[in-house]
Amino acid sequence: MLVSCADPAFRIHERLEKTLQQDLESMVAQIIKGSGKQNVLDTPYFVIKDLREFHGDTAKIYSAYAEVEFYYLKDIKVAEKRKFRYDANRHYWDRYFKELFYYSTEP
Image (tube, rainbow, N blue to C red; front, side):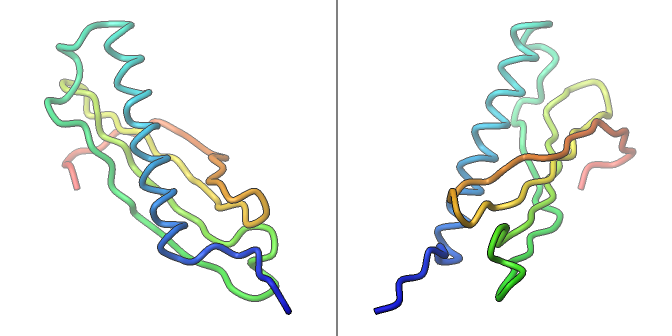
């Protein structure tokens, strides 16, 4: 019998949503701790800009990729972009890139 270590797509997506929500909560908590709740949007949110799944040999190490933008600051038009990859062996989303950027209009 052959057993696969790959997660079903719905499980990968569930784990991504959970990871993103935890990241957003952490970002908001840091802002509140540093400068107060008045500097946080009433409803902070994130937007998944790119989500790809990999198959075959490409997916042996990383089976998915996500690029996400987080919007949480109230009066400053700055958002945070984070990139994630899903580690197929350890079954978790690995954040490997983050940067702040200015935007003119929200998505």
